[in-house]
Image (cartoon, rainbow, N blue to C red; front, side, top):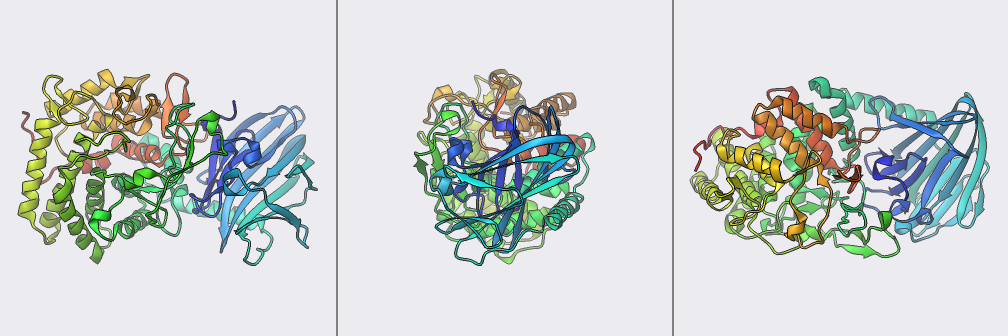
Length: 605
């Protein structure tokens, strides 16, 4: 077995990111964007699919951390003869991305090795290697070019670039790998010290804006830095994860491409940034959202590319074996074409939250929202694929209808609170109609709880969002019954599962880990119900699942005690930041979003 998912740390430059293993191997990296074909794809295959190893020869012990308040990874490697520190950083120049690796001797002498295997197009294309006049190595295939810069003597063997060196205390050896288009001018050599210092200053200044949240401040800051690493610096788009096809079940087929931007994350993202004090990032995300969803309302997608691209056609890459043979490996995501009604609620709520937060008004926003609401009026009563993007039959998912209610509720609030114009009487009527329908058909009186779909008895963790969005108050007996039912049926090993996959609702083979965001939602419910001890206990348990550098994947396998799914996962870190502020303050995201200022139903059926 290769590296565990949690054995990886991440470095990024606001355009792309790389996964660095504890063993010193960069096993995943694509240029120039998060969703570009990888030139190091060993994560989803074997080392012959591309990687860059920088490690001691022989046995070693590893301890790593991020340089304080940065995304610069520092790995201390101890061998029987000495200790070295490897610092890894991704930076950028105009038209160029730079991967910097610095090895510094700490104690004694250490024999080091490097093995660079470049395979463009997701591990399938070996480049043409040449040496430039200044001694740097150049690797070219098609439009891609990598240039390797180091003082270490290197040799080529079997389409690999190899080198070895000995480093003593206080000595430093530097490696730089720069990507650019092969038809552009060759970039100049790297200024290592300048790039490292500039990156340190950037991260320190950026995270210094973060508001404190009590005992959880440092935990929230690490997740915020991770979210920033998943945010494209030019477009403002936030990808759901940095990888594709890391499995939700080892050996299974639940392997999806998450290197795109989901509308479902919109409100969670705004609350996370706004609560932490990052107004610029919140505004950039809102701007991305507005650009992405512009156009005909009936063409709204549930996800888009980093710059708002709509065509995310899904295909399988058969030359990659998959992480621990979990195949297929997929590029693109067919769920982009699904009908998922909840995204309308998330989009309208996100714009409402932006208004409440005082972000500068956008003249196009309200016109777009009204168009989306007009279309939602005609489709809200349809069956859909739901929050979990099922690939089975469409259903009337309770959460989808609740979020349709959110869309009209926030529209009414926008008229009443901000003086905007719209058919508010009709929206109120629709809001009431949807609310009554959900209470009539989404609530199972025999089980005394809300259920996954209309007129059935299946539970779903998305029901935890009902009080969080203000559909019903937390003290309502139906909410209490739903939380109790989820605690009794969906919790395994202390974590909340999305639903029982054995019941076949999603059209896929059963089996997956616990979706981590769901457990954070339970934390937030405990906060609303003033069960603070339960909230803190569960939150601490979730924090303990992070790897040694504070990162979370999408899911967790409670039996195997390991992380699952794409990594690092924005939804997990968004939920962590929001829960941290919910526990620490009386005005956290859950307190704000659950308010029903103008429309509060307290009567239980």
